[in-house]
Image (cartoon, rainbow, N blue to C red; front, side):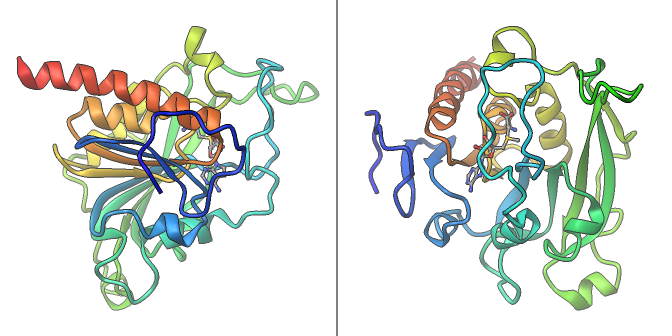
Amino acid sequence: MTVTDTLDLAVTPPPGGQILHATARATVIWGDCRDPQVIAQVPAGYGLLCTDPPYGKAYKSGRSSNFQQIAGDDGSVDWPAVLAEWVGPVGTWVRGLATKRHVYVFGYTAEQLAGPLRLGGTADLVWDKTQHGSGALDIPWGSSHERITMGVHVKQQANRAAGEGRGAARLRRGTVLRYPRPNGAAARRHSNEKPVPLMADLIESSTVRGDLVVDPCAGSGSTGVAAVLEGRRCFLVEIDRLNAEETVRRVKAAERIADQIDAA
Ligand SMILES: C[S@@+](CC[C@H](N)C(=O)[O-])C[C@H]1O[C@@H](n2cnc3c(N)ncnc32)[C@H](O)[C@@H]1O
């Protein structure tokens, strides 16, 4: 595996992935987040898992015919089980997410995530997109929100049973987060692109400057952009080569801004 700026035209990432970008602020890997060799590269004891995995609904944007179906979105992948590997296998204290640190996962319920990700306490957040999509035209409701499950990862079962990880947030907030979904140029980057201010809100709520934020399904890189702009570090993996390259482009732009802020 090498750090490279050159284009690799192969569609499938190599075993272990390929590092496209590596700085003090950000690592971007073109790779499969189910690959144990990719998982092994995430630094131990990181500070936040913040991710938006495929929803398993063969989602295709109603807004544009430009987007292909999202990789891993055909329902064949057990995403809670994959994310469990990212927080660290059972019995692992050192690897993965540090204990009592937080996870944010889009599109999946607390019931689906609490067991595999070993969550002590959870909260159901709602991203209010402020406008509805077209969705199914035969019902009178167009979806204008997405669910986000927040949870506190507590490694040891006995500690979870004792209530550890509940009420760990520093600030108490309302659970509806209102941010317009990306539009204009942003809407052409990725069919499921999340707004950077939304991701920054999640990251700010659960980390401090310098913490490492991990997103194994980075898409167009909004998690990483928000992390870098907030003075955090990020570790990103994306299986689609074009998305991974877009992530690198956006993360580099965020790094230039972060450098200017630090120098001011
Ligand atoms: C819902 S999108 C994420 C969008 C992202 N939050 C953004 O703001 O652009 C899910 C992403 O996971 C990627 N993905 C699917 N399977 C993957 C895998 N096995 N490893 C890494 N990435 C994967 C897809 O290519 C897709 O870009």
